[in-house]
Image 1 (cartoon, rainbow, N blue to C red):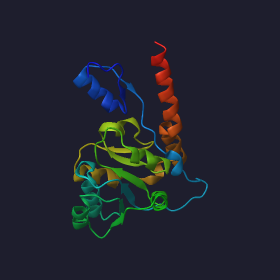
Image 2: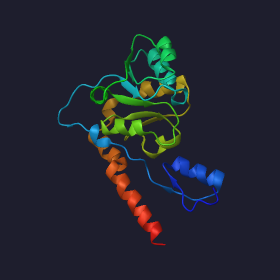
Image 3: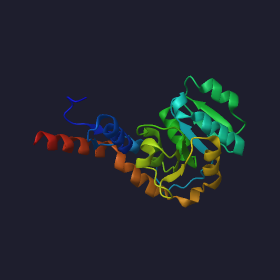
Length: 212
């Protein structure tokens, strides 16, 4: 670690960890997200209903919180993806939970455009999927920790729940109102994390350190 010349962090949370554990400064360059594949013509309005979550079904992503909360509140939730937790999730799911499995790109985009919000109950260094959801015009309901702090803006791109518990997520779901959000604003903010922006920042960073 001491032989590293420069550190790049993929979120401010990782920047904080680098400082805490290595006592080194770092520069944040957010990961590249293929936002353009999710953008839809906002002039073509459609009814959005229910919630969605996608990704690999592994313990740290906490899909179980989303499934249990929506089951408890009798809210529609579409779960996309597979993994070692899939069987467990299906066993705990109520009748309002739909499992879409390994959806194709087209199917994932269609479901995203028909949903009200994206659920992000896990804690990740950054989190690509919530930004993809924002590009599709979806606000994000996220656990207040990790990379989500860099793009979930209360009342603008989504809302946080404070504790990683079913009760806390239920509170956020119960107070959520899709009409509070403007899809065009969500899409615009997601573009700050696009591939084009990543390439520009990455090249500018290397040009800067190479000029020293």
